[in-house]
Length: 221
Image (cartoon, rainbow, N blue to C red; front, side, top):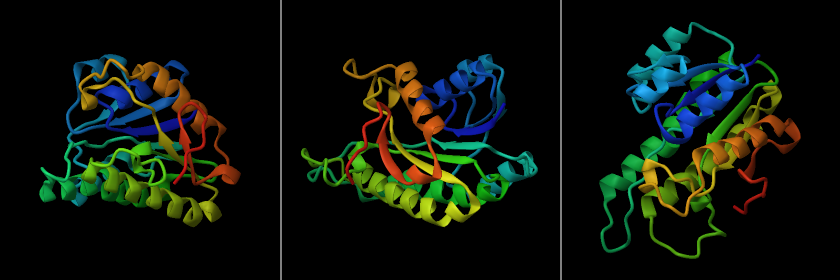
């Protein structure tokens, strides 16, 4: 039985990670700003009131964890603000960088001391952070922040290799969640997380730092 920490755990993909990890009898630490009834119903351990862009809040989370070993850390929390060139919102771009790129890096740095050799760090990113795959433009803040997260993941895979910690950089697919207004063209969180967990379970140091779609396809940078 492994211990996993999951951020953004109160809804969507994060909530489904908690459900599926618990169903296979892993221990789950669910981290969120505010717990939902759905998360509370799972019965997993909840660390709520955690603002991942706040150093003080992260310090509080670390104090609550009290050095507990973590076999898996899934950094899923993120934000999306749609914008094009005509309605570019600089503050919105900065906020997406802070939430989507900087916060996961800071939390990863804070938690690696609790991750033993063989542990896995998963960054939930997006293929919208692929430069080669960008054929539609727009979405400036989101795309740029996810490119930054992908680069952080690649550097983490190099810097953590000596510790025996492998890093997954994962695109869940187009998932029908509140973040994208439950787009009917999206797959369900259940299907997305099944694929994401398969990628995490298969991860080894030899494949650390690779950019994967949840369906097993390797994605271009």
